[in-house]
Length: 541
Image (cartoon, rainbow, N blue to C red; front, side, top):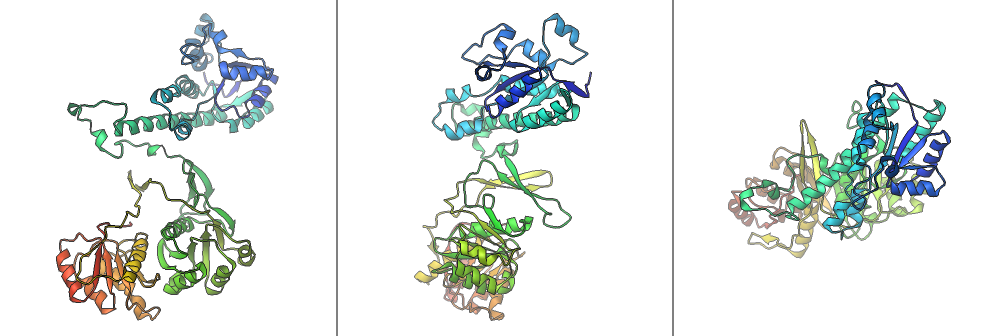
């Protein structure tokens, strides 16, 4: 029988996280609600002077096996699963008391793995809760007759409803709490599953023979995926997504505690971030992190349009803006040094900007920028090396997972032409190579003296990307003569080399790997261009 409103008479409490539990339990007892609890929680309640009935007394069995068996008893589960008006007779026959509310949370398995990296396998196994998830699932299944509480943040709302409705809780409330409970148990089980899968993939605690032919061990990613137990908390709702007709929100990975990202940055002023702001800012910030010396990156529509390194961020900004002032209009600017007064004054004079992000912001800057209230200013903190992680993209009906594209060590660069690059050309080549990783494919980056002189992005063929990159020469913005050219992937034909020679490119850095590599190298030799192979590709789709 379904009860639209449930009168709460008896509550089972067993919590690891005891935040606000005393206040919650006190309020329940003041309404005459009976408390039933396990050993540890029961002791905390009793020490506070609250009347509590121990589960071990109710089921007339002590906790055994070092606490492994506490609540695994038919009187507990029948009390939770019993259907009011349908199972009353059987419950009376076996002296089973109905349990109207279950308040349970578990030890965080994620916290255990994070804080106790030296735990043995046996110690970790002992932390896997059996009865807790079972009771939560039972209560959530029977939400028509039982209230399920897994989050201390819900205590106050539950008490408010009980007090305003004379001890009753609505079916709507019970259903919402049941949904939350099922998600809570699923996340807990996923964490444990991922832990065991990790052990399996690394041949830990498992003995396999060749005959087993267990192909899971040879795969980086599991065949079935529950989002790899990634957990996200909503940081903010967006006004809209990429376009006004799309709804959007910004979520933050709750397991990623590293500072120095857009997700963890503090917004100090300006309009709320848009969906596109976040994408552009992430590209700008991740790109500027590639450089040790003072550097500025300007991004427009997820592509760098101007990058420069100099002695100060102020001069770096001037050079980055000079690279493509037209595209820089309304762009995102990122720095790898503290934002200072001089740089801000220059930005305000030079251009309209959507957002600025830097590790720290000098106080004087905000006074200047306060006159431009719409400019978004974010302080992200100074970063450390990015830990190996994964990237993923949603497609219709599926999910693509890959390793994050790290900038692999380039100590094994190979010069494949007769002409050797000068020291300055090598430095400019590495400068451009770091940038091309963040440009949409097909991508070409030209640069000289730690300043981009042309960027071609997102083209269906590489020749067009090159023509866009060198078009800055025709616009008389910069002198591309003597620049280095970086390509995110190999050249399928030597036509790119011929075009590069006409505008004065002296050195090309590219992955190599084309079936026409030898023909391309000979073409470079013919025009006196040095060519460096990286053996690494940086497609960005």
